[in-house]
Image 1 (cartoon, helix red, strand yellow):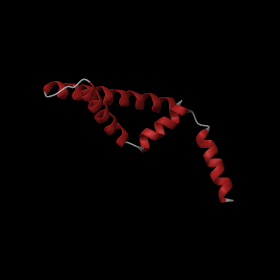
Image 2 (tube, helix red, strand yellow):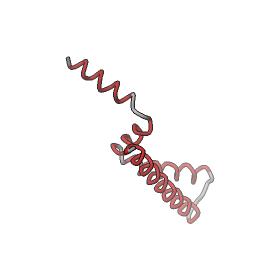
Image 3 (cartoon, one colour):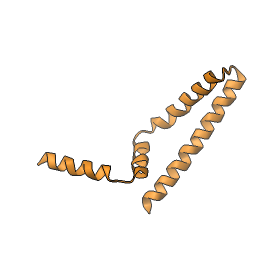
Length: 83
């Protein structure tokens, strides 16, 4: 009986729209929004060998751009979910 319930809940979760699944993932894993800008900043500054003030400016730009992306993504996904 428990196995049947697990199968049904798993099938309903996989049949959802990928955008809804992404919204649920972002809602459950808020730390992703904090880790991605740091990793991208590290990648960009090391790739272009930036140091000092240039690295700081790039890191601030990456943080603000990724923050905007997550806000827009969250807004779009939440509005799509309501439809």
